[in-house]
Image (cartoon, rainbow, N blue to C red; front, side, top):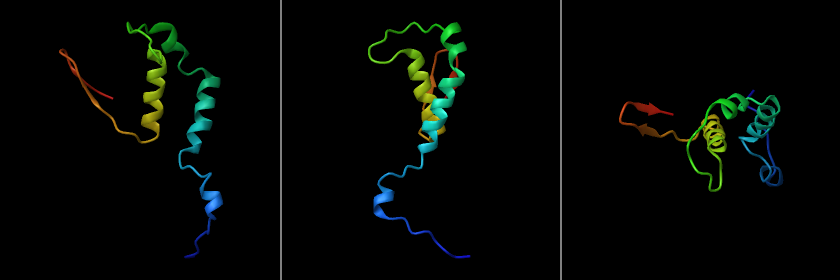
Amino acid sequence: MNQSIMISARVKAFFSSHASLAALGRKVNQLKVFAPIVQKVQIAQKTVKYSPVEKLMDAFITLLAGGPTQRIQNQDSDLCC
């Protein structure tokens, strides 16, 4: 069973290993997973380009995609996201 699948360059141009995240994102929006956060969590931060909730959603997708995490240091505690 050492057979491999040959994929043409044309098909590779449209292939993404993270394509499933697009479907997941649509489902998360449909289920309104972040609605409780939007309703109950108020972050005192001005919106220049993206709202604080949009930044949280972006961080969530970055984690799902295997992106880098960053340590946040606070006076009271260390938070790792």
